[in-house]
Length: 329
Length: 262
Image (cartoon, rainbow over all chains, first blue to last red; front, side, top):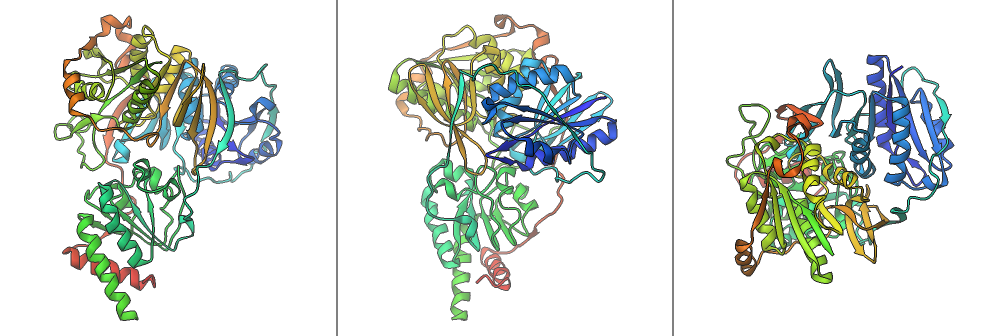
């Protein structure tokens, strides 16, 4: 029977959300095509994870090895190449995560398997696998076809599919496969996890956040925003470019590679709304966005939108809030 | 240390309004400004810093038409020593896989200790070229690289994971690192640099020079083919506040106040 492989992603003892999102999508595809979902789990002392996965997949292929204690793309590549060659799945799914990005292109090249990355949707069509992805920072969607092949590989975007337990429990079987690793991977060794130093402000605890992005343009404009934040009693957060430029420390970054926040107010200034950022703030109670581009993706997530130069809005807003606070006092 | 940097000439789209062209498979590019891909800019800076510290050479390489020479010139002005442009009508509509093959055909004949490039490109965002190239060259790699510390025969690199976490790896050289933005602060181009760059020669290579065949490149040599481009469907649309900046500010303040947040 045809199989869909889902590469299980886990780190520091936890199965990551993307795993369940992929399994849900795989189950949706297998239902349509009479195939079977296989979760592929590589690690060390992870039988508990395997048991959890039996509630989502018909088969859990389990490889345990002390050399798989931490993710290593080269170790994964060797083991997966063998498993894929043996089982010939019609599709291999991985997360478009730091791990998937590290592993998938290299594995696909080694196997000669067509790969599409960062997919938002996957559909088997008569001519092969069709994928939906994005270009130009999410401003354009693309439908693309993969070259016809026995096995396709994809990495899928995080938080795109909603994880759901199958309505009928698959009562999956755990199939343990011996590890083929004979020695440590010498050319690429995991040393440790590193947490960047904290700047001392916890944006996840703030009631009101002002999120700033590329539209701030120049560091000298920061003081204007800081004044607004002070008047409003809000904490400054930002999208990636602001941290890259060194204008705010990395613990102010909102998004997939930063923090996830849920404030009562998120005022987005000059943020276009790339999905990486949106992932970290879309659950805020009230989102108000100011951006010059009327088609900026942020307006699909905001409750209120303002298409205007933020440098005109910010001083006016500061004045208004000051006024209102005065009345209250 | 000899460093090869792969760069891509891409349109700046962060603040531009995009339109899909008549073919339905590309965007209209005439009104867009092209520049070096943002991620590659950091890769180039990292390479120049390594050369300044340790000596050696920096070679920049791109696959692109005549207009991509402006990106190569910029790299030369910023400190690259030599530049190679791979170009051929047959290279058009190559996906990331085919581009990696084209880059490989030239890089395999160069001497390198390190290959650097951006973790992804701002146009197709596939994040594939680096690891594919590393596999073809049979050298170790790391993507999403936030820090590179070179030692004798090895490098310690920090890779960005999710949620602010990083992992530190030790990787044998020669190696390929795909760098994430923020790894350094790219420098501005000096007038001296621009003058010097104008005199440098850019080596141009076509399909015949690469040893590849027509079947290896373009759509025939690609994993994926674009069927169509379309504007992302809008599931929800913000309520737009209109008026003068003063009027808008009043509306925002009233909304915030109505939620008890002022």
